[in-house]
Image (cartoon, rainbow, N blue to C red; front, side, top):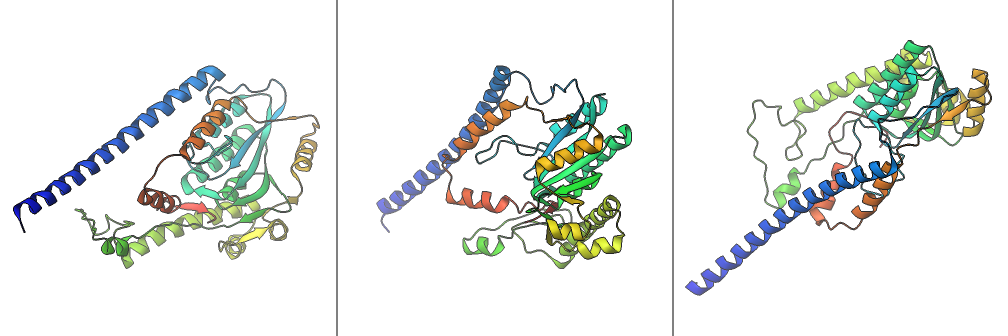
Length: 339
């Protein structure tokens, strides 16, 4: 090969390397700028609309606090990647809301509006425990209404309810635990990429997408799933006043219709939302009681709509898009979740 050809090839390679480096740097810089812009915009909207999640003005009359368990239950929330109306589940916000209701003399109970496929074991259990503590500290009731779905972690949280109402078209149950993982090992071999891990033990890379899972690692994950399952079935047995053997027969992960759930004593009544609220009000002896849902977080709804819509126009490589799709549910985290 002639010297000029070699130099030409080297020049092309150098250009490719430089172009790639510039692309990576640009992506990192743009992502950083985007995050800073989002934070700045959020602060501006908070200032403009007045208030934040930590400042909830509770009613000065008798009320039932409504908590919307909508979407995936997780301990943190972020700006969604799709259009949002601001009603997504917000874990810390609801914990603060319960704290405030517990201290209010006007609060007469909590109403859970549930429309969720479930979520993480941690977040589901933490909200459940907080609701149980609320009941213990106040002696006030908790009610749950199941809309179109109330599965897995959403059902788990609802075990704190004194009475469960379900829409006749609701799907519920899915009592079980799942860990979802992806394995890219064969794909990586095809494209000539490998992962090198320097570890302190054979199981330090457990769950790695770049390596086939060993029998021992599978058993480790199974033990975690089994332990969380025992916790779940125990919570259901306590919440629904059923013996554990009966619960485990029902808890094979399947979903039940509202009618089936009532037959199995997983819910108490089947009725619509307004009828449910009327029933709760009658039970409390106050037909005019207010069902209060905090509305002072409107800046979140606007903020999420702006950046949710903007994200639809972001340029993403095919690899980035595929990875985001695969990582969405395959997180390797213990989940009370209906896939």
